[in-house]
Image (cartoon, rainbow, N blue to C red; front, side):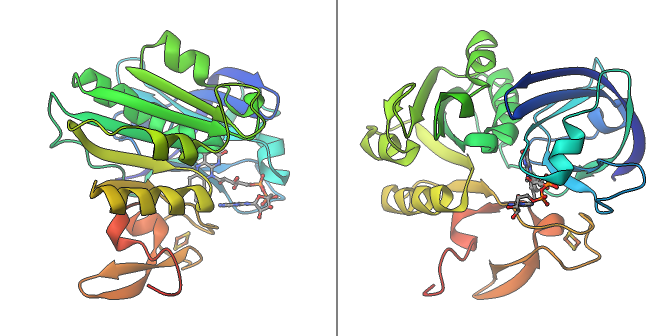
Length: 268
Ligand SMILES: Cc1cc2nc3c(=O)[nH]c(=O)nc-3n(C[C@H](O)[C@H](O)[C@H](O)COP(=O)(O)OP(=O)(O)OC[C@H]3O[C@@H](n4cnc5c(N)ncnc54)[C@H](O)[C@@H]3O)c2cc1C
Ligand code: FES
């Protein structure tokens, strides 16, 4: 059950165009799961009138906090980036269906593959997987090193047993696409599943690799969202239901879907 609340900003960190904002929101923290998202009213009266969707990047039930990690890309995220600790903002959440990881047990090894801001839901998921004692290998890629601001927090909080970084310009980690590194990685026989979020082209390539390796994977998809809770049908995508593809609301039945259910190209 999602909630509509006015949440106070507790903390804000920034690195160039990336922001990690923590809210005091015990009602949401109590219900949150990795892969779910919140709809944020970035301006009390608008513009923009529509709320913006952001994955939960963390939730702490004891502290009663949730967090989002976002990239400033346009009007809404620019307004959101200007809020300061102490200010209030309207949130609806937690929304959608998140990652399935409850059945995973030690000694499983999980691959978390994030491109740029796509690391947000994986950052939260990694916390939960480490709590369960699972081995977590994180692949984190971006165009340049400034696109990987969460690398230090991932290392400091020991959220990855192995953290593999890649930048297209070679300024940090491997030079090239994160999918190139993934392709070269020798997969452990303990590898159980992959969790993926990032730009569409990256996710499509990862889906191809997982199919080749016969490894299950879940992908957090992005779509333009009007409402975030199933009313406007603005977020639909072709998803396999039974034997055929159907137009499915990403906000309602996702944003997380299994690799084999997602229609990656017109030919499928
Ligand atoms: C379920 C979900 C979870 C998300 N989680 C995160 C997150 O954790 N961190 C984060 O930084 N972003 C996330 N996003 C994307 C984020 O919602 C958009 O970047 C944001 O809405 C852009 O708002 P804006 O007003 O700044 O941009 P606008 O001014 O509306 O647009 C600026 C540019 O961003 C593009 N854009 C806008 N919305 C989207 C979108 N939904 N998908 C792809 N491109 C878009 C536009 O085409 C345009 O080029 C998520 C989106 C969804 C659907
Ligand atoms: S965003 Fe409105 S139905 Fe999905």
